[in-house]
Figure 1 (cartoon, rainbow, N blue to C red):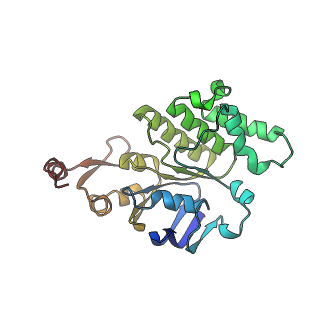
Figure 2: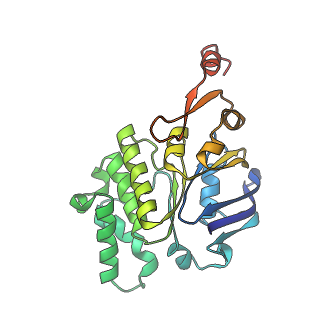
Figure 3: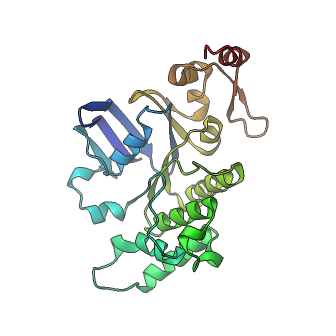
Length: 269
């Protein structure tokens, strides 16, 4: 089954084409990583899948329905999107931020219902933020703040979660915390995940499926073991890499090859 199916997308910023003709899908219950060099269109594609950007051509189907014809509130009940570096409203607590995630389920003049409160408590619990619920968002560490944004998205109680570079600016410990959290939510709650990641090894270790983009085109698609090959990585990123199985998990693990290192030292790479 397919949660999101995009067909023949053409996406531009003004007169500048970003994605010429792209078709892809996110399988239900799977974690799919979009990878590629800077400027390859990863974030643009993710924002378009969430209907934050409108393609010039093409169609996107969410659980079989064309999102162009769906009310915004209906989409928000099925899909949550966490962009890069969300803006923090001044003076709000973690609890108040998470409450924003309930807007698709609330009427305009109604307060938080029992279901709203239960969803918010659950989001706090699974992200490990219960003890921080009354803290101001702008006093949190980077890792805590990122978990709070994920909690807000989880409070929407959607079955599809899109994350744009969720580990950016985090140290390695907090990166692993976020990656493991999302993977656990996927496995235990069957949440479909699409995320943009920069680290090739993290993409392979925490994803079921990889979509490799270059200049807005899909150049490789499949399980990590099929996509993460030296040939594909060179085609996508222009660098020579060695790829070997991880000694414990067997997932592909990438290292710069000697040639790549020498070329970089010489200023050629």
